[in-house]
Length: 302
Image 1 (cartoon, rainbow, N blue to C red):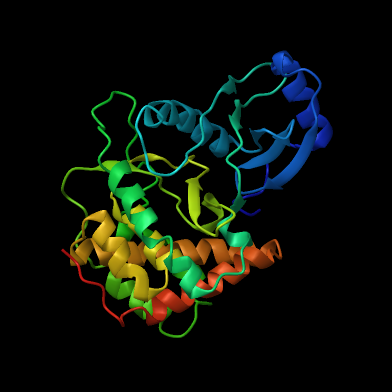
Image 2: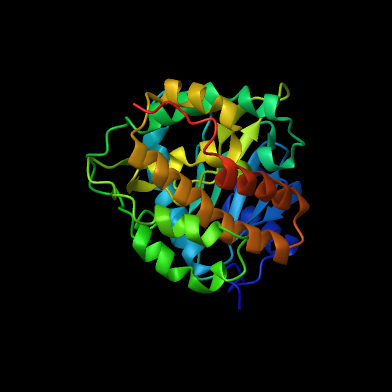
């Protein structure tokens, strides 16, 4: 069984019944299936709301955390749009997981775009400024979750990947092994999105990143987990603009970000291949090229 295999069935009929019964204030429901990922089914409702329905226990737990944290983050003026969970229902006897609905962020996900590097580069400053703002939001709150999945524990993550690395491209395992010895993050933790890659970026009509979605992995942890978006989405010649907008990073943080991009690629490329997901496979090709060839040009780190 794959990690993304649902433990509860979701289809259009079930979604229609659940949303209609739990949110009668929405009136007659016009439902459009958007897609299904590792944790949730997503639906466009009445052309203006996105509802996410978990199809496995881990996804339900992540959604509950996401809704609480997004409520806090939406009190801050972040430079990109983020979801605002306005319709939330807890687990109930007729469905064991929470359901959440958000006003639609207009646009399309970045993985669905056929990018030129010059177009990707246009969003470098936006992404750097967004992460700078996010990572400066106060985290002194009682509900802040830490990195319970050990996403930023490099030796732990490397050890778990032994089987997957057997089928990795030449040189991949050796580079990842080298990066796994990078010093771990020891200074103050920050709010991190935790799963920032092309499918969780929203692009507007001018091919600029305008929003960041799917915050199920949000927690307080190592900023390198988010800084990895430079390796996963931006061409190397725009890394300088990204880092300038962010405020610069030290060499260890940059190396941990590269490690994160590589381990994320291992999981997402496996998922994309199993699902025959051409959009994600295309992005995986971009990520692999970046992480394997990205030493030149070297970004200027603070």
